[in-house]
Image (cartoon, rainbow, N blue to C red):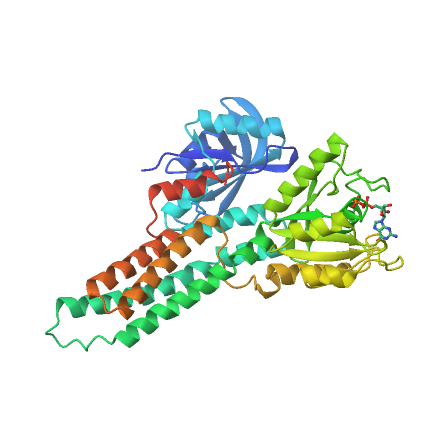
Length: 454
Ligand code: GDP
């Protein structure tokens, strides 16, 4: 028997309606203590998926007019009896109705507790529960589609199929080890190796796309760098579509790092507009330069900007040096002005460069395509399964390492037991990924990041 939890499931802000969700064995009984239906029938006589109009009371004090929606276990989000009370979406009204529900015997739900119950009741697995959170926090179409794909169980199905292949391989071996004299066909090591290599390849494929997938769902920390006045702020404005940082023609104006999230194609860039990189007597600006260097260190993508109307100088050279070995796109700005800079030198250092005029917006499409190419997001199909959380990536990596060990063990002619240990360990990791056999601490960690009411 589970205790009954309640929370406001819509934001605590003025709105058309506010929804208070109650879930647990006594959900309907508790709702009956708060709601008097217009028909006079208590909610407890209603079938699942039925709505009733009524009024919410705290004792005899009228709180609001409302509609109660009754769900009967197991046909609800949590898999338990659930009542959702839709009342007017005022901050005070919703908190009073919630208070009445808590006073009638429910306990205040913790963050993610409804979804945790859905998981514990087998309504969804762990990767699907994580998809719920991703869907709520999606900041663009790509993130939303990827979350819907995961919510539909695409990743779980894929991981389950890898698990099944490994379980079949392990079972075959176990039978052969335990009953060598029976009529079990000889263990074909080539077949075993092929099964392991197949799962290895597929898992590696998923892992390879992790970073690109993250660029679509969570965004990439991106640093815009360049010496003063090359047009970094103008580029940031071009990307974000409105004036965010001050653009002036006095060198060194952009002293603080201005941060902003923009969407370029399907990619989310967490942009930082840095102070111009150059040696300076000006202390404030020097601090900015240090911050810029730090920002480059942490960035997943660097947009290095150069001014085509001026020859390259030491600062430009320093930037080319700082960008070495990094994921960087060289941007030649101010193409509306006469070309003076040595573009070949930039190309030699950074490879492909993109020509833009941040003022007129020319080259935006080319830049957007170059960003998708650099991050590999042009190869991501959000309708296909992908790993979307760091937790999933860690489990997949552990499984991959164990499968590698199993393949090595086969190749080295080690005992069946030794091979089996590696396969078992890979299966455990995959079961943890989907949550079919996740440790309590892992489950708790996943749900601790959820908001209250979900
Ligand atoms: P930052 O110091 O690198 O951030 O440079 P800003 O964005 O502040 O731009 C410096 C100056 O260059 C401003 O006067 C901008 O109007 C000008 N500017 C920026 N981009 C372009 C461009 O594409 N063409 C031209 N002609 N001027 C530009």
